[in-house]
Image 1: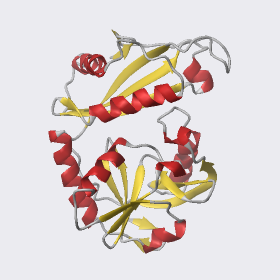
Image 2: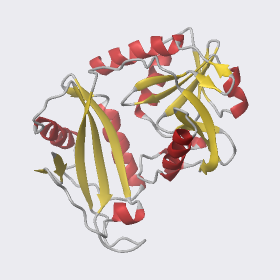
Image 3: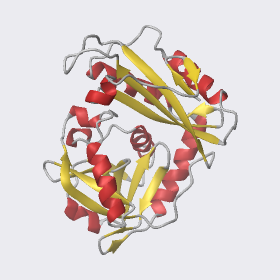
Image 4: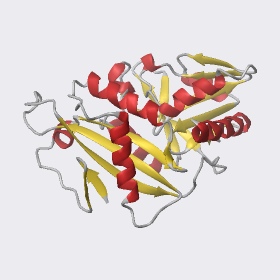
Length: 279
């Protein structure tokens, strides 16, 4: 069951001239729902509103945080099989009309769900070997920080990883700085210093990234730096981990000849779970 503009339906269709389909004129939020709540819903909502404003979409008067939360809950409650958690995608696109220049800035939306296997974040203890993806680069700047559906670099990088038996790849910007992983932000641990690329480098304005920055701000034993990261720093790190709202924290176990631990990742994941339940 999906929710198309407030109407629940088992089958949703879009027009052949849908602007999201034809021009990538769309933004989305991926949400985690568990324990009767949407994780970090306020942050997701305000990021969506900011993205729509940046893309000059017209935000409907009824598109409040309470309205969208109610629509998400309505969609979840329509599912016959109640899971322990849900992955939710909230997709917003500009209405049909025009070519590159739209006829209107009014929007439509779709909410879809998938079942999750665990009610909370669980640390992945399996192998996660990564490599740099260097065929294409993320453009540094504001548009790269958005959750738009212009994700060709992520798609091609995922194909490259699959073809070469990597679990993930790290993306670079045009200055050859490490920006993020295929499906989330990255953090490097070196001693008591933890680094993550700044948004100005083109990294995604991730909600889980924001939560970890907040958590690390309360931990006196660590120093957080939002700073550009060179590929040469990767093999010098003690730990590297990926963050996203569905998996929480995913430790990288190997990059080229260097293998990494996950001690800090475990500590942070416990704090992230606590914040998700209380926030």
